[in-house]
Length: 180
Image 1 (cartoon, one colour):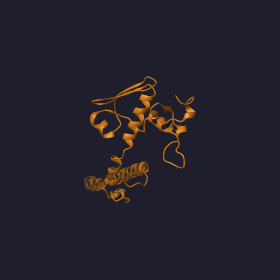
Image 2: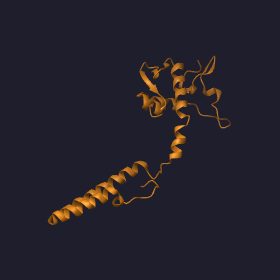
Image 3: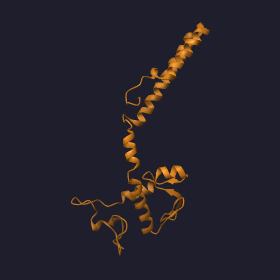
Image 4: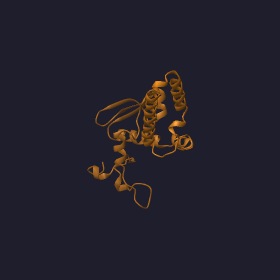
């Protein structure tokens, strides 16, 4: 596919043009080896086409849109993941300390993570560990979120575990022996 989302013939690329020029030059230098050289080029073109098809299947027929990529880069999801994760850790006996270079996280099971960022760009630029929905522990937190009732966009009070300051972490009550 080219930048406009149109199929691009393998033989249209500049790389293929250079291959044809090499084939032509080899035919002049060694006319007796033309059949072998043509067969080799055909095999190269087949391999290139196969690689192109394999690469295309990774992306499907989706056309990448720079405006959409910019919009997604400013989406608040990383902030929500950060708030959810740090609130969970603090409410369940873990720790979340923000330092000069990312977070130090201690999970309720005792495992620790140092130098953590919830923002991919920050993690990449500063050599930090990127914690996102791709992490199994974060995904499990999302799976524990209560369902919303059909009348509102917030969980019902029965779905939240209550503390003196209100709902600490949105966790289905069924997963616990009642409210603490």
